[in-house]
Image 1 (cartoon, rainbow, N blue to C red):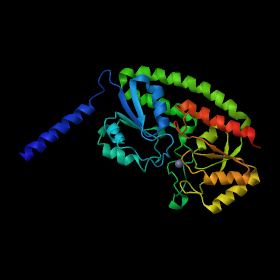
Image 2 (image 1 turned 45 degrees about the vertical axis):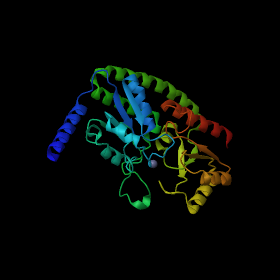
Image 3 (image 1 turned 90 degrees about the horizontal axis):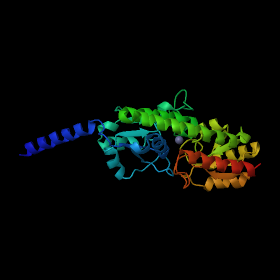
Length: 311
Ligand SMILES: [Zn+2]
C-alpha cells in the first residue's frame, strides 16, 4: 500500500513538473523575480503589462546581506525567470534560495536564470591572487555596475532579449518597450550629465566601494573609503588616515549608503568640515526613488546641492 502511494506521489510530481515546463500559456504573464530592486525596475520598463516582477531585496537593504522573507520561496517556486546581479554580489543568500525553491526553470544552468552582469561594463576585475586579507573583494569585478545609466541601457536590452525568448509572442512588444526606454533614458542622461559637468574631477570619499561605475560615468574621483577594506567595518587607524587625506586634499563629500551606521561618517565630517550625503545605490533606498530614473534624479540632486555649498 505504502509503495503504491509513494509511486502515485512520484507520478503526480512528474506530471506537475511537465506542466511547469510547458511553454507559457496564451495570455499568461511571465512571472519574474529579481534579486534587487534596480533589476526589477529595468525589467518593469521593458516588460510592461505582459509580466509581473518582484525583487527579493528591498532597496534600503545591503544587497550583500539579505534575509529573504519565507514568502519569497513560494514566489521563486512559481517563477518563470530569475534575474540576478551576479559577480558574487548575492553569493551569501541567493544560491540556497534557488536550491530550496525546487524550481527547475530558475536553476543557474536553465533558460529561466539570467545573470545581468553579462550585459554590463564591469570595472575593477582584480588581477592576480585574491586573499581574505583584501576583505570582501569580488573576484569577478565590482558588482555595483547598475549605477552607470549606460549599463542600465545594456541590461534592459539584455532583459528584453530574454523576455522575447521566454515569451516569443510578445517579442515585438518587449522590443518596442526597450526602444521607448532607451529614448527616455538618453534624454534623462543628457540632463544628468549637464548637471554634473561643472563638477568634473571632484574628489569624494564613499563608505563602501559601491560607486565606481557611477563615478566613471559622471567623472567623479573616488579617493578613499570609510571601510578600510570592502565589507570590513571602520577602524580608528584607518579613519584617522582618511581624515588626514581629506584635510590635505580639501575633500568635503562623504557618500554613504543608507544601510550603514552614520557614526563614523559624521565624526569624519566634523573633523574635516565635510558633508555626509546619504545616497541610495538602489531603487527604493529612499522614499522618492520609485524607479531607475528617480535613482539618478535623487542622487545627482543631492550631490549637486552639496557641491554648491562646500568649498
Ligand atoms: Zn560591494
